[in-house]
Amino acid sequence: MPFDIGFFELLLIVVIALVVLGPERLPKAMHTVGRWVGKAKRGFSQFNQQVTRELEIEEMKKRIAEHEKKIMEQAESDEELQRLREEAQATIAKAEQALKQSEQALTNEQQKLQSSKPSSDKPS
Image 1 (cartoon, rainbow, N blue to C red):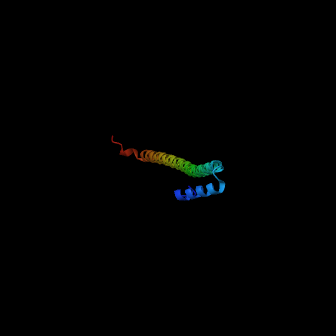
Image 2: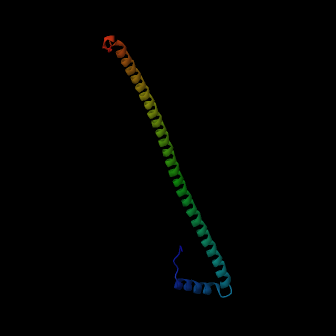
């Protein structure tokens, strides 16, 4: 409650109102004051609920922004992994090509060595 009114303060207000307004108008005045207090309570309650909703919405927006940031970071890392995979595949392809060329050169050298051997080495 916004106001801290105890029982004795309330009793004092009722006694003063009884003296000022009289017994005929006091019930109607208390009814009117009760309605005002009820409206004020409802207004405070609605305001409190609206502020709470706004705070929750702000918190959700922050969480959404964090999740979007994480998703973007994940997408960037996936793109980086794809780029590294492509680079690795290109390097492997170059290495395989170089290996084939080395094997071809070795085969050619072996053939040259065999063809250049003198025929006298053959047993008769």
